[in-house]
Image 1: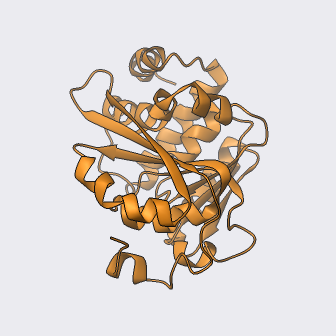
Image 2: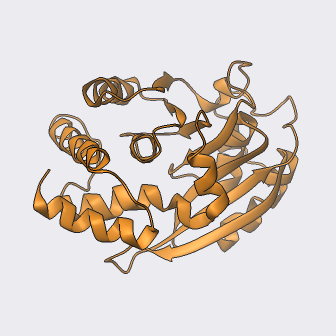
Length: 247
């Protein structure tokens, strides 16, 4: 681990009031190095410079805890079940796994080659209770092995909230929470998603707005509490949620 990596990481962790061990920091650095190396042959991220990666990927992923003490306590609970929908290069899922090792995490994506890379990351870093899952969100949302089985679902995927809600809320158990990472203005997007959220069993919605430390970039975490089971017809068949969103 380089001094420059620590120089960026430590202030970011301090701003989140999050303490990590040296071993956890080494794992984050190891993950960063693996992403950058693989990025030479696979398009994983446009953010490759060390300082930017720490701020815009690592600290941004961990900023979920700014949404409140309850979400931090959930993440810290041994055996808490979390799914990262549209994990891509493993963000936030791998980063959350390193920071909260007691969580039981599934990294879900529709692109197999990304998951093959993440399997390499999991093995090389020696991470436990984390695995990859390949498929379409519409399909696993109807699979009894995954439907309404998760305490927390997270997504940094670029999709409108009414579409994301149909992908994700059926995976969350009653009493659980869906956390969506957003940037910029989201008020209209959230208003347009009210019908979908209610229809899919979502209830109280909370928003945490913040700036990424060391930048002027605005970020938000939208938390949707799951209050009741999603109707059996949702999610609809593959392609329908994005083509015919609930409005």
